[in-house]
Length: 283
Image 1 (cartoon, rainbow, N blue to C red):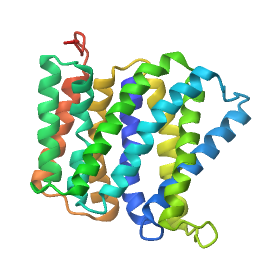
Image 2 (tube, rainbow, N blue to C red; image 1 turned 180 degrees about the vertical axis):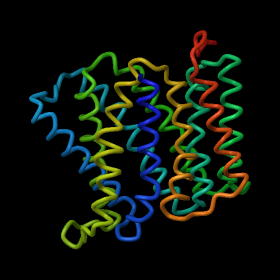
Image 3 (cartoon, rainbow, N blue to C red; image 1 turned 90 degrees about the vertical axis):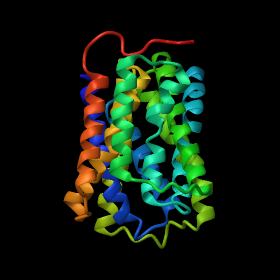
């Protein structure tokens, strides 16, 4: 059940790509990021109030949420800044390298995981086909991949110490607060923002579904699924995003793209099917 929940989470996150692309035609990147986290924070806090589930401000929850929030904040900001200087394909491929970085940082590998990663990374390359030239945008995005990998690791380390909803809610609130400065620096002002149907739907998809809902599901699932397997499941995101962009936006997906997305799927299936322990510590 937790692995299925993570797959559904990845489907929702994949839907944010076409939604965000349409929204960024109307609002600046960091401003949209701030609005996304603001909406998610307000929705989650409102739901918790209705459910009479108060957010617990214990010292341990605040401390662990703050550490995880640092990685989440830097992941999103470096990804957004990196997109200004590199191609979308390079950004997507380099970001997805957290699939490899999570088990690398944790020293968790076995033969099945190596096979799964080989399929997944090969599929990512065929699907995205990044350029071989490195620029500063790629370096920002590599920092983004490391930050997302560290966030997945932090959630695994801390989720057992705190109540899931409080741990999730504090992260969203903290990232929202941290985004105020970058958004204002970029030029965000609340009064001239035109909340068109496109922008509203984008905020519903990215803020309500992809952040408030899916993020809580991720935190809950990481109580039961090892971090390296979580990262591997998230490798489905570029493939699902490509399929949804092909379906919704009419973007082209050629033969190599279909083959690549198929290899990613095979890699995820290999890495998540039942068997012996999925991870062996080499430390």
